[in-house]
Image (cartoon, rainbow, N blue to C red; front, side, top):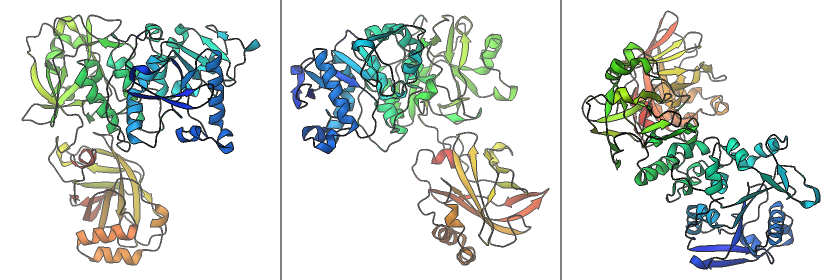
Length: 574
């Protein structure tokens, strides 16, 4: 749908639609071609298979798709076509990296994109195109197609200069850009021209917010072309790929809407870094744009080893409430105001030019200029006229890219667990929080079949949304609730296999409890078969019972600090 042209990738393999053979082209020698957009299914055909097809390969569903694509391309007058399944040699990591970084360009430079909706059954009379007007009941079949839910097909919708849809039976379906815009939240002018100069980062992220990919990393890699960035592929890095994508974006853009993500399920008290963890945190941003009519311009960002360096006007909430309280979009309790700030961001919603959109932040250390995002489930709206009256100057500050609680609290101890006698409640007390609970726990489940009593529950940190499993073990046979009982309790990254735990291991546990606590812990790990679990901490503590609560009298000592990104989130606040 775009009229713009991107430079061709250095190397391209194209499929001859008449002979089904692959031909290599380089640079500007690439001929006119048609390109296929589709969702992968069972029994796809790969690069090496299309070169030397056998009867087994020809019987695959993917080969039939290639035949129909080639036939349709010829009918439309195209000799060459491009299909991701067969035109990329995925055996070569270098070619795969180049292909994914060039994917947007391939779709952008195609003469036509054929979008094949394999799960849409719509027939056309006399093999002519079927036009689906607004309100046609068959449009719902199109909108419910898996094609509109996949991450990779987003750029395949936006990039091409022209796109035609085809049903399962390869009948052409004509759809108005107006209807496409309505279902995808992508402006009609983008779908018809491909011009995205005035589209904000947050809006583009919003387009991807309800899409999924098979590989977690592809949520980021599928968006590189949309933001005109390149980065190496590191499959296995998980959500770090989306953080890297945002880092690359801010190296090329000063668009502050990238900071307006929102985590709907986060605790009010959660600390977060400057970046979102996934595109779904931009789901609310369809109408968030840059505010380009303010008297000031965004100042450059700089990525450092201590966070994102920014120069911003940072308003204390106390000051904001003094002259903007009646129009503050978020209600705050009195005790929440201290230490809370809002930065002046050049962002607004499309409908309002006299208000800005911003977020809450808080200094994470008494000394220094390091801040974190707080109340990440809120976006703040402020009236520009009132806030502009402030004489507050911009200051240089650092915002953590990922908050680790050793950056917030230096305590390395938990003051103890409280477990209700009926096992219905698990509370972890934090010395730094004046007795307030930092963790919320599920019902403690007794593990059957083990002579020493064992219980396990999942607990979730209020500040970081991190979940961890608490395993409580008693060396005696009287159950966990008993006066003057010595317990071991452990924090694990995931639930142990309770079937394995239910084996008779009482002798081994006795050995573990008879040894020095540190040696006993490692004996315990060996016995319980949890050596492959990340092991966060342990404690050996005397237990007392007060008001039907089992209370550990002792601190949880940490064993080691792995480098995993959320480990400090988990233990630093303990």
